[in-house]
Length: 179
Image (cartoon, rainbow, N blue to C red; front, side):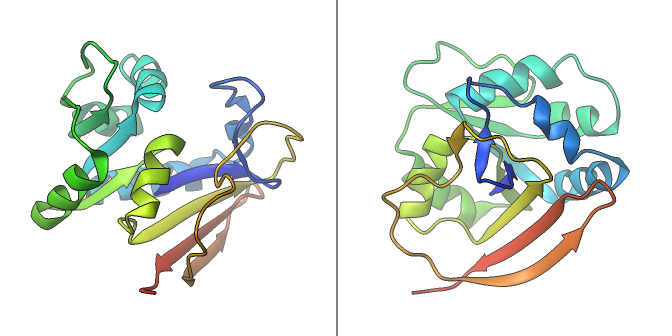
């Protein structure tokens, strides 16, 4: 999982796709981390809403991150999306945990989930995240959609890295520990 959250735990503002606050964390260091992750990844996974927002932004964006976002294999999980037209995207209607478990067995490179809170809930419940990469942005939103909504089982994690950035953001990397 790779996500940005506000200091008060929101990954999205009060309205869907209210993400302008991401700029508080973005800078040369975040761009370098993004490039490094995309170079190590074999695929990106999205739920429908995140896919639609990411496709709308990245398909017309330019620069090194955009080049990688447009070139990498993407899988969008949706039962309602009629088609997935962003370059190198496969539409998957199957049960996400089963599909992702099979992908992990055959993966060449990391499989990353960006955004996609609803998809992440199912993958977390199935124990399919090996690592949580969370950027805490230097902002308090006061309202929005939390990344980790209530109802999850406790999940022990082990800190792998805590890195502060010049923007004031902090990258936290946690490894899932077997229960």
